[in-house]
Image (tube, rainbow, N blue to C red; front, top):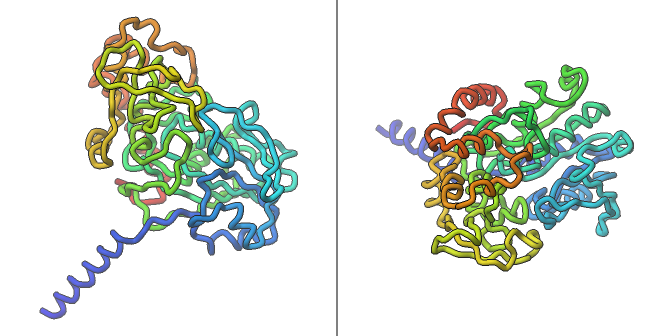
Length: 392
């Protein structure tokens, strides 16, 4: 009896410890990557989310004597304050004197000249697991440059706050753009480390020959205590208009409205938790205002009528139900009188054209979902080959 009670106690203790153990991103596994950087000239791809505890990775590495020769930055810049689509200029970091090279805008990939005084590259960015969120496109271009210039790459992995489901149409690569480079669904359910392994394994990198990708010296420093069942909340906002976990949860679904005439709440305190238009007639209203990260938002200073999706994390997760919610896009389209105006940028390669065409054709939500299923199921099988963490 004592043996049985002891066994139960041990199992209970282990389960309790596992449940209470905090998730730690790869950047905090310092013993795994600091020795790889000692004595090397290091190029970093980072932004404000690149933290070791509460210390920015640039500062942390310099404190440990690491020689950082160049910093590369994605959309929103090093400090994460530039607005959506704002072009980031090259500059010098005033704090460290290190050159900062923007890889968002006309230039999206480091050149051989940029990498000349670099021995090894490090990527550390908080992603949110959505195809049209541009950080994974930046990762791909960095990987291609690493392959072409024979530079080792270390990825400090971070948990995916939307990593607990996979859903949406798989992109047709004939419509590829920087908001979607690969045949993956809108919600892919992978960390950047897992996604990088997929880019190599599926030979999706734009290098010649394709097999050249296998020569990439890729090291992924994993998260600790993370699984794809985890509900992870980033300690800082990944970008200006994803200020809370609630906005992050809604982003894949409400982000679909950005290819329409509808405001998604940029310029308010709840972006991606509300959406609307001045010409709609619903009772809920909001007014977009110019602010940091959302300068001159759509319908600035105008009253928008629409829908309010704000709520607690539990309420939002229940509404999502582990799926990409397209019903709001359909509702907005059906509520707007002039259907010809609704998709003003219908020739934009980055917008999911299949969804747009299906909505215009009057297909139901169920019919649209059914059309995704064959390619979505195929992607899920591919995804399984590259997972580093237990799945949901």
